[in-house]
Image 1 (cartoon, rainbow, N blue to C red):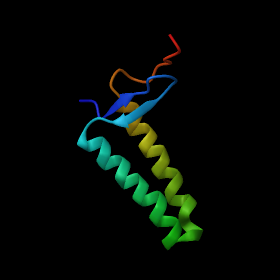
Image 2 (tube, rainbow, N blue to C red):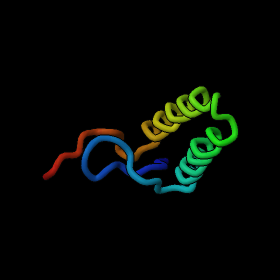
Image 3 (tube, rainbow, N blue to C red):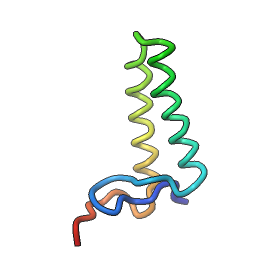
Image 4 (cartoon, helix red, strand yellow):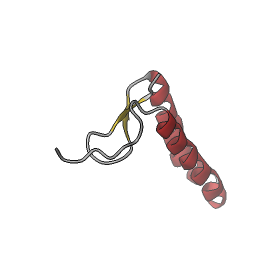
Length: 72
């Protein structure tokens, strides 16, 4: 099933709609906030792949997919 709702306007995913989506979001925020504090020199090597992974999961698990939703 879907983990994220589509954005109302624009392109991409909105907020999570399932616990799995919230878990992905919380884990991502923990990585983005925690890694630079613990290992500042290695932050880019962890944060960039984590961001790519979250975008890929959101793309794959968004209800209705990512399409442009304009002002109607």
